[in-house]
Image (cartoon, rainbow, N blue to C red; front, side, top):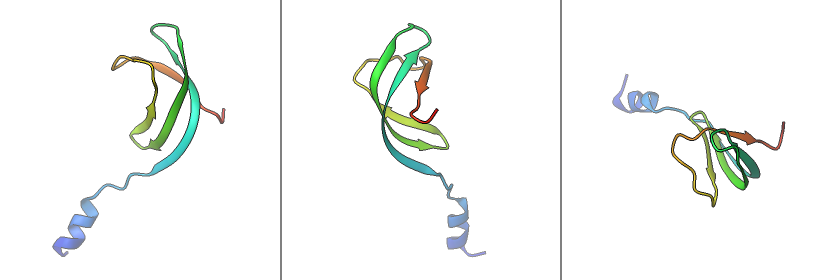
Amino acid sequence: MGKKLMSIMRKRTVMRINVNWLVDMESLNKKQTISNVKVLTFSSGGLSFKCKEKIKVGESFIIHLPFY
């Protein structure tokens, strides 16, 4: 196979879905709810979001998605 074809085959294909949802997140550690969290994208690696509250790295959350 040619070098160009091999480089194309090595690239990972990641499905990414762009969304624009406002959701609530419930902290499992502090038992608090964070409102108006903006979910930006879903991908095979997880989801990305923005919020105005400070959260710790590694903190566990339940995210209430709009289609449950």
